[in-house]
Amino acid sequence: MNKKVTVAIAGLGARGLDTYAQVAKLLPEKMEIVAVADIRPERVEEAVRQFNIPAERCYTSAEEMLQQPKLAEVMFICTQDRQHVGHGIPALKKGYHLLLEKPVSPDLEECREIVRVANECNRHVVVCHVLRYTPFYTKLKEIVDSGVIGDVVSIQAIENVGYWHQAHSFVRGNWSNSDKSSPMILQKCCHDMDILLWLTGKRCKSVSSFGSTYLFKEEMAPEGAALRCLDGCKAKADCPFDAERIYLDDPKIGVRNGYTNWPVNVVDTHPTEESITAALKTGPYGRCVYHCDNNVVDHQVVNLLLEDGATINFTMCAFTSKGSRFTKIMGTKGDIEANMGTNIIDVGVFGKPHELIDVTKLATDFSGHGGGDNRMVEELLDLVAGDQPAGTALTSIDRSLESHYMALAAEKSRIENGRLVELSEMR
Image (cartoon, rainbow, N blue to C red; front, side):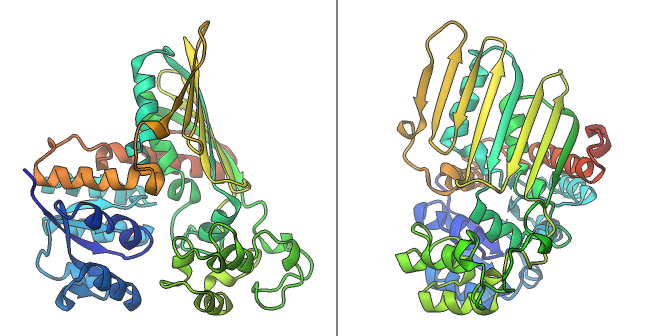
């Protein structure tokens, strides 16, 4: 059909502006951004600069934008976790299709309500579970579904969050406090809950979980630690979480080394050595990691019993040098070791030579969550344009909520000292 789809974006952060909006540049024949909203004027100005949005279509909040008549065919909801449903439901009722940032909500009733409204309004809602769209997991799903390793009996999976990513997003950043955002097992790991169910094609029966904030708290602060990294901290030399070391000097993401993308552009929209230094002196990202208002865990293990008796053990941990995901799938006829960090999948069928699959040779786009971001947005555009059959979205709202039930069950179990939680309680 080759129809250009119009898009309004609510929330111009790292996901809304720096990631999903960029698809309009890659696929100008499919997507046009016609309206934007954010509470930060500098982010709206940046969107105007990049996409030439008319002034009358720029709004100071999602609420202000939602007060207007319908502005586009699709709205990207990229606001904060606890705002998603409050913005999503009015948008659905106005006739928008949605790209809905995960998590949908940390509140089960809100999750159920937006499903009801989406179905009632007959709107497409694609939840940003981007891993399903990556070449890596697409290939892994193909291998599992082929039956080459037989029935899946057990899975071990780990999300290596990365020490600096934990400090950036979950200690100093927007997702540090679950009272303001979401439990970390939901915010960060509903991706993992979703992908593990999708790979197996099964449903979860019950969950148990343990985890805590082990390191990032006041009593663990080293001697001489200042409240801010640039306030003459005496522990600075030996601290891997030092804000100057991460945002200014790091070889890969430091501004002094010429880097200006995520995460430094979260600290300041237009990162320079001067602007980042100023932001670290006064803003949240310059705080000592031992003296923040964070309460989310820095490590958690989750045990999942699936309905057919298969089991999954999942670990999320901040204390890793690299950020990546690793999965071992064990079946009745063989096993698979899959490392997303290297994009290598090792298939071991019992009694036969191992097969090594290099996923980098199967695709060209590995930007943004291993190539998943762009493919996900394009799928929604194709759904709305009529170029893809209705009901075929990989991450429709109905499918994506199962991961939320699992993550919230895990958090409930963790809080209740590992009590076994039945998924029927959550559904």
